[in-house]
Length: 286
Image (cartoon, rainbow, N blue to C red):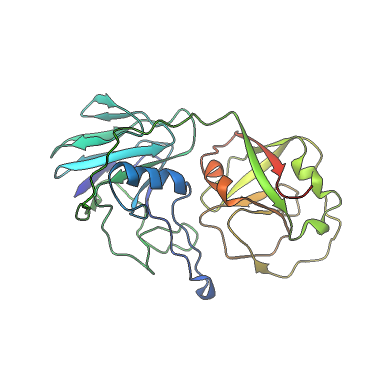
């Protein structure tokens, strides 16, 4: 069992999501940076889909009510155990009563806390993830929340640390044009210059502002019928500022999707904080 003392700006329980419910109007949700959650689970010897805690920017403080093995990955929030600094992406041993405190990350957006055995709360539709768009799943964490941990897996981790590179100043994001690139006068403008992440980005989507390069202009002014949208879809509202759909994206949308980000690059976007510069690179045939 662990007890949440402080949450920082926001903290939620996340696993790898609940796929397979689109026909019921429910998106997959799950960790925005799936690779970071997987790494946290590997470090503590869990299956990759075990539930952990997604922490926005930092500020999480928790107390262990029993000996606990933990790891912090994703955005490099400085961590201490009872005031003693400990390593990022390393295996942390918490004795009963010890306090793990995360400071605020100097780069990146989301940190992930994995604990041996995973966060063992009741799943909803097969997942322990909180979906910020629909409200499905366990509510956001708050001070005083007590979270049970599951039984430890048999396999003990065989590494102590997994060093990770710092986030780059300019993110290179690969995307495939379509399915509605023909609704724009020059869809190639998406790949010109660069964009910056807007202030209102969240788990639903990374909202972009044009920083350098030509604007995206519609060639078709008619209304688009509502159609399905996928993780990584680059939807363009009438104002021309794209939104890249992330973990809690709606399953349908009414604005044209000019491109779709490659699945391998979604985790990079999950760590893009407001002001981060992004450049799109064309994937597939030119």
